[in-house]
Picture 1 (tube, rainbow, N blue to C red):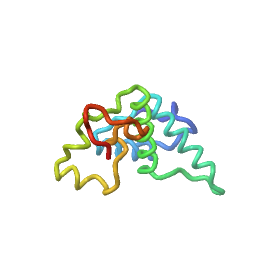
Picture 2: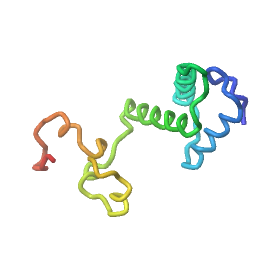
Picture 3: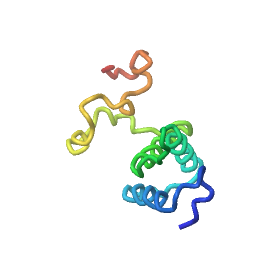
Picture 4: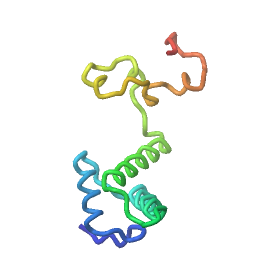
Length: 122
């Protein structure tokens, strides 16, 4: 593993290893702008405490995943199939909370526009 000297505030090697291990459990190999931004964000949080301490590895991992989703949204790569809100298997429905998932609601419905092609707005 590379020395985490390129990361903001130079976190300990142990913490970087724990965050990487947490992400690797989900098949995510961290790198790039979002990776450095997550550490910058974690460092800002660490400094916000009266006695500075780093967030946990799972919290830093969550920040990284959130930043990845934002990056995908900016690149128009965060899309689901058009009928994903209508065709949800029971196994997937059990994994989703009971509240409506914003990614499954089309932007035209969120904006209050009339549905297209005879689809019914929920």
